[in-house]
Image (cartoon, rainbow, N blue to C red; front, side, top):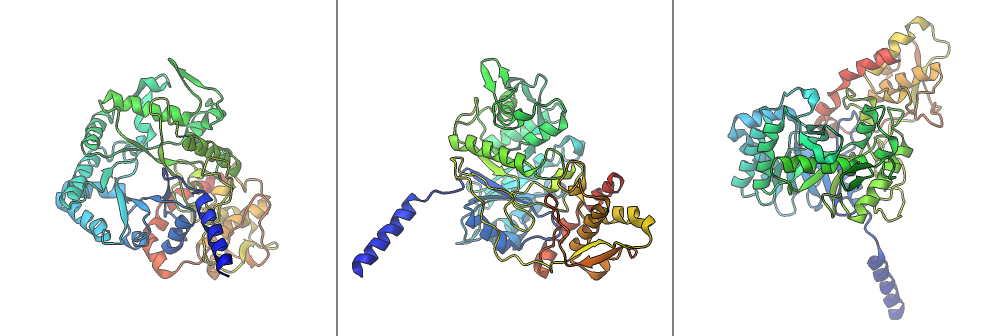
Length: 481
């Protein structure tokens, strides 16, 4: 038996020695919570661990949610929403209190491995029309000062995630990259401050947005296939991700900080809500991205390993759709933690399904649909629009996964979306007598009619604010249906 045991132990050691880490150290993921039915943080943290993610970027600092990351060793970027920037910029004492409550309190032995604090999120987007222009930098300074005075400045750095629209190139060549005129002065202050404090520049790069905002944009340039390259003097760019990254470097060079460390805070591809947002395209994009990251070749101006955070972890059904209906479908997992498609995160040919969330509980398998013989047929359009304005009908839009449903099933999709978002409440499936509850799944091959997950009271209360946000933007769907 001793000999057999030795062989078994040897075999186990061989398995351990030959196992390959699925997620590289330079790849993290964004965990957003703009959803009506968030997964419990315990389930999400286990999902991160099961899939080997060692870095996570958050959009707030909810202590209940952050607490579940304690003892995991997962590197965390906390978030400060834009609506808190003015408060933190006005009084240094506010920043000290924030650091004490959201950083110091988590740093006990076996606590949370906080690495960054994101002060705002894309505060200089052109669509904000300068709303946060005067408060972002003062808030950044106050947070970093508070971290320094708390003895955390060497461990935790304050950063400001920026959208790639803060810089531009008049020729579309990276070498002409400069920061936008309206933000150049404040960006000069920010980048110098980041350099002085040893903090990175965090940028969100979205090839999908580049593709959809310009009808003349070459589709293959959004991926990593090498089509339609850009020639910039002696440098050739084969994809917009690398070209965009180097445009930022030229913009930083213009401000005297060409060697500032850069983290890609968000990068990904949505899977629904637009004709170019689907699982096949998302897989194609990620496969190309992971190969580039695995090669560690970097970009022409910045060779070497690149640090990125995938966007995002889950679909978020209450996220604002002002930029587009695709905004609710960025997840590499569905709302319930099921992987959407196989991924080769290693970039070395190890295509596989990610590990699904464990312990997820669902509401009963029942759906709200249009009653076949319902009276008041003239109210169908009104009730459909009402349902979509208060739920999520982005999959019904032109080119999306449910856009080819017949008229009755389209109405049923809208009714069911509202019904599920309201936890299958009996009153949520009436619609002036037009609807009924069925136990037969009305889904089609391309269009999934969801049954929602169960959410406990603590989870619902904690994420209530995020679930309410942005629902009003769905009112536009009334006019599209």
